[in-house]
Length: 195
Image 1 (cartoon, one colour):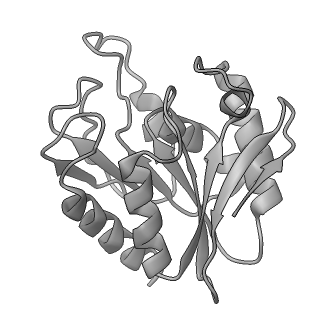
Image 2: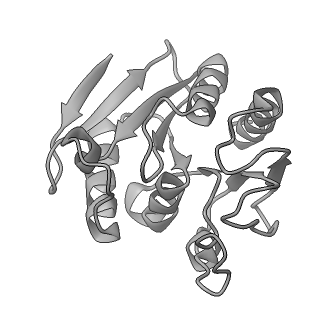
Protein backbone atom coordinates (compact mmCIF):
# COMPACT_ATOMS: atom_id res chain seq x y z
CA UNK A 1 0.00 0.00 0.00
CA UNK A 2 1.51 3.33 -1.03
CA UNK A 3 0.46 6.89 -1.53
CA UNK A 4 1.84 10.29 -2.38
CA UNK A 5 2.21 12.98 0.27
CA UNK A 6 2.61 16.64 -0.61
CA UNK A 7 5.73 18.35 0.72
CA UNK A 8 7.21 21.84 0.19
CA UNK A 9 9.42 20.30 -2.53
CA UNK A 10 6.96 18.15 -4.47
CA UNK A 11 5.24 14.89 -3.68
CA UNK A 12 6.96 12.19 -1.64
CA UNK A 13 5.72 8.61 -1.65
CA UNK A 14 5.10 6.50 1.45
CA UNK A 15 5.00 2.71 1.17
CA UNK A 16 2.94 1.63 4.18
CA UNK A 17 3.31 -1.65 6.05
CA UNK A 18 0.69 -1.33 8.82
CA UNK A 19 -0.03 -3.79 11.60
CA UNK A 20 -3.18 -4.10 13.70
CA UNK A 21 -2.85 -2.63 17.17
CA UNK A 22 0.49 -0.98 16.36
CA UNK A 23 2.62 0.03 19.35
CA UNK A 24 4.56 2.60 17.29
CA UNK A 25 5.24 3.84 13.76
CA UNK A 26 8.72 3.49 12.24
CA UNK A 27 9.36 5.90 9.34
CA UNK A 28 12.40 5.01 7.24
CA UNK A 29 14.14 6.86 4.41
CA UNK A 30 16.35 5.54 1.61
CA UNK A 31 19.96 6.22 0.72
CA UNK A 32 21.07 9.00 -1.64
CA UNK A 33 21.01 6.93 -4.83
CA UNK A 34 18.93 3.99 -3.70
CA UNK A 35 15.32 3.14 -3.06
CA UNK A 36 13.07 1.70 -0.38
CA UNK A 37 13.69 -1.90 -1.49
CA UNK A 38 17.26 -1.95 -0.11
CA UNK A 39 17.85 -5.21 1.78
CA UNK A 40 18.47 -3.54 5.14
CA UNK A 41 15.27 -1.49 4.88
CA UNK A 42 13.31 -4.65 4.01
CA UNK A 43 14.87 -6.43 7.02
CA UNK A 44 14.03 -3.52 9.34
CA UNK A 45 10.44 -3.48 8.04
CA UNK A 46 9.98 -7.19 8.68
CA UNK A 47 11.47 -7.00 12.19
CA UNK A 48 9.35 -3.98 13.11
CA UNK A 49 6.14 -5.55 11.81
CA UNK A 50 6.85 -8.69 13.86
CA UNK A 51 7.23 -6.42 16.91
CA UNK A 52 3.77 -4.88 16.28
CA UNK A 53 5.23 -1.68 14.81
CA UNK A 54 3.81 -0.21 11.61
CA UNK A 55 6.35 0.94 9.03
CA UNK A 56 6.35 3.66 6.38
CA UNK A 57 9.14 3.53 3.79
CA UNK A 58 9.48 7.02 2.35
CA UNK A 59 10.69 8.00 -1.10
CA UNK A 60 11.94 11.57 -1.18
CA UNK A 61 10.45 13.93 -3.82
CA UNK A 62 13.56 13.85 -6.02
CA UNK A 63 13.22 10.07 -6.34
CA UNK A 64 9.47 10.28 -7.00
CA UNK A 65 10.31 12.76 -9.79
CA UNK A 66 12.71 10.21 -11.31
CA UNK A 67 15.98 11.94 -10.40
CA UNK A 68 18.99 10.00 -9.08
CA UNK A 69 20.93 12.93 -7.60
CA UNK A 70 19.69 13.91 -4.14
CA UNK A 71 18.23 17.31 -3.38
CA UNK A 72 20.07 19.68 -1.01
CA UNK A 73 19.91 18.78 2.69
CA UNK A 74 17.45 21.57 3.57
CA UNK A 75 14.98 20.29 0.94
CA UNK A 76 15.38 16.68 2.08
CA UNK A 77 14.80 17.71 5.69
CA UNK A 78 11.75 19.86 4.92
CA UNK A 79 10.15 17.10 2.83
CA UNK A 80 10.86 14.53 5.55
CA UNK A 81 9.31 16.67 8.28
CA UNK A 82 6.18 17.17 6.16
CA UNK A 83 5.86 13.41 5.54
CA UNK A 84 6.30 12.46 9.20
CA UNK A 85 3.76 15.11 10.24
CA UNK A 86 1.28 13.71 7.69
CA UNK A 87 1.77 10.11 8.88
CA UNK A 88 1.76 10.86 12.60
CA UNK A 89 -1.02 9.13 14.49
CA UNK A 90 -1.59 8.49 18.17
CA UNK A 91 1.37 6.13 18.68
CA UNK A 92 5.04 7.00 19.24
CA UNK A 93 7.04 7.77 16.08
CA UNK A 94 10.47 6.32 15.45
CA UNK A 95 12.50 7.64 12.53
CA UNK A 96 15.49 6.40 10.62
CA UNK A 97 16.85 5.24 7.33
CA UNK A 98 19.86 3.98 5.48
CA UNK A 99 22.89 6.16 4.75
CA UNK A 100 21.65 9.61 3.64
CA UNK A 101 18.20 8.74 5.01
CA UNK A 102 19.75 8.18 8.44
CA UNK A 103 21.37 11.63 8.26
CA UNK A 104 17.98 13.22 7.48
CA UNK A 105 16.35 11.40 10.41
CA UNK A 106 19.10 12.60 12.77
CA UNK A 107 19.00 16.22 11.59
CA UNK A 108 15.21 16.46 11.97
CA UNK A 109 14.64 14.55 15.21
CA UNK A 110 13.49 17.64 17.14
CA UNK A 111 11.01 18.66 14.43
CA UNK A 112 9.56 15.16 13.96
CA UNK A 113 9.32 14.41 17.67
CA UNK A 114 10.85 10.99 17.08
CA UNK A 115 11.34 8.95 20.26
CA UNK A 116 14.16 6.90 18.71
CA UNK A 117 16.33 6.84 15.58
CA UNK A 118 17.46 3.78 13.60
CA UNK A 119 20.57 4.47 11.51
CA UNK A 120 21.47 1.84 8.92
CA UNK A 121 24.97 2.45 7.47
CA UNK A 122 25.36 6.00 8.78
CA UNK A 123 27.86 7.75 6.46
CA UNK A 124 30.30 9.20 9.00
CA UNK A 125 32.43 10.79 6.24
CA UNK A 126 32.85 10.56 2.46
CA UNK A 127 35.07 7.59 1.48
CA UNK A 128 38.73 8.45 2.03
CA UNK A 129 37.88 11.84 3.57
CA UNK A 130 37.73 11.34 7.37
CA UNK A 131 38.37 15.06 7.89
CA UNK A 132 34.90 15.75 6.39
CA UNK A 133 33.15 14.17 9.35
CA UNK A 134 29.37 14.22 9.77
CA UNK A 135 29.53 12.78 13.27
CA UNK A 136 28.04 15.99 14.72
CA UNK A 137 24.67 15.06 13.13
CA UNK A 138 24.69 11.79 15.05
CA UNK A 139 26.07 13.31 18.26
CA UNK A 140 23.31 15.95 18.30
CA UNK A 141 20.54 13.34 18.69
CA UNK A 142 19.31 13.18 22.29
CA UNK A 143 16.83 10.29 21.94
CA UNK A 144 17.92 6.61 21.83
CA UNK A 145 19.74 5.66 18.62
CA UNK A 146 20.80 2.34 17.14
CA UNK A 147 23.49 2.37 14.47
CA UNK A 148 23.91 -0.78 12.36
CA UNK A 149 27.23 -0.44 10.53
CA UNK A 150 29.30 -2.65 8.27
CA UNK A 151 32.83 -3.20 9.56
CA UNK A 152 34.14 -2.66 6.00
CA UNK A 153 32.09 0.49 5.38
CA UNK A 154 34.25 3.01 3.46
CA UNK A 155 32.06 5.76 4.94
CA UNK A 156 33.56 5.11 8.39
CA UNK A 157 32.58 3.67 11.75
CA UNK A 158 30.85 5.82 14.36
CA UNK A 159 31.83 5.24 17.99
CA UNK A 160 29.46 3.87 20.59
CA UNK A 161 28.05 6.60 22.82
CA UNK A 162 25.64 6.85 25.73
CA UNK A 163 22.24 5.81 24.37
CA UNK A 164 23.80 4.98 21.00
CA UNK A 165 25.06 1.42 20.60
CA UNK A 166 26.72 0.48 17.32
CA UNK A 167 25.94 -3.02 16.02
CA UNK A 168 28.88 -4.00 13.82
CA UNK A 169 28.09 -6.41 10.98
CA UNK A 170 30.73 -8.19 8.87
CA UNK A 171 29.69 -6.46 5.62
CA UNK A 172 30.26 -3.22 3.72
CA UNK A 173 28.10 -0.08 3.32
CA UNK A 174 25.35 -1.97 1.46
CA UNK A 175 24.39 -4.09 4.51
CA UNK A 176 23.20 -6.74 2.05
CA UNK A 177 24.51 -9.86 3.81
CA UNK A 178 24.25 -11.19 7.37
CA UNK A 179 20.65 -10.10 7.54
CA UNK A 180 20.10 -12.35 10.58
CA UNK A 181 22.59 -10.28 12.62
CA UNK A 182 21.05 -7.02 11.35
CA UNK A 183 17.58 -8.30 12.27
CA UNK A 184 18.72 -9.41 15.74
CA UNK A 185 20.26 -6.01 16.50
CA UNK A 186 17.12 -4.14 15.43
CA UNK A 187 14.84 -6.57 17.26
CA UNK A 188 16.75 -6.17 20.52
CA UNK A 189 16.85 -2.39 20.25
CA UNK A 190 13.11 -2.09 19.52
CA UNK A 191 12.26 -4.42 22.40
CA UNK A 192 14.25 -2.29 24.82
CA UNK A 193 12.91 0.96 23.45
CA UNK A 194 9.25 -0.03 23.74
CA UNK A 195 9.49 -2.04 26.98
